[in-house]
Image (cartoon, rainbow, N blue to C red):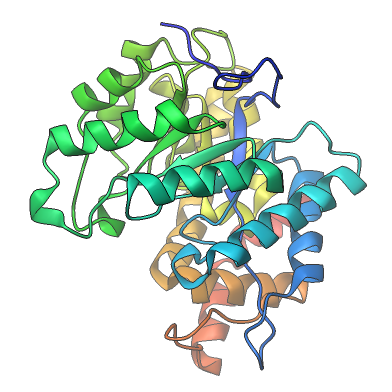
Length: 327
């Protein structure tokens, strides 16, 4: 199996390849009064994450509040992120855009526009609005149709909680991986057995082997070591917005063969990440505000946290943030 990690669909141009390592689905920051995009903060945040060791960024993922943003805003955030990375000298850092729309036509259109905004890859959920009509064949055909026409390669996004419980199994994911323009899967389902099977079935890229180039991404940083043990290629994790250095440290320790150290640090990371997972977008932005001085709030209807909750989150991630500051 050979995937086009770094190659374009129907084009001779070479795009930025996806390296093994830690990625963040970046937060989208808004003006606290108007809820307009806060482009300067979006740029500052992107630059901080890559300076702290992340190897790639995802714009307009779940943490980026894609569901709250217009198509024009999705492109504006992606363009601003690319500009920020290029200006900081990170010209080879890839950007993945969350480009899911309800129809094949809409998703293809967004993928085409995203390429012009600076996106290298597209992260795509299965269609789910008409849930009862979305059997396995319909989902398969959706991804193949998009992959056939998208100018940027696709990464499949397996996140049952966001798509009315649709949970793509390893057989379907391996079958879809045979398409040259489908280059990875993000396992936010947290199923390491499934990740293992897909990584094996696709000969996924690892820190120790280029393999086919296919990328098997763990979807949360609380199973970073487990992803590596399962033959995974990287992590795309919301917690990396808050403690990127610790996330990178766990990854690097394991990749360097220091497995006991990696597992010990993973335990601390998992405790802190659970605080953020429970508090979701509002909590992640609150932690960024507490420890970095910016962050703000999600767009309505997301609730703003009260002072007690803000203090509890700050305290809940204190242990891992003390490590973060030392790295």
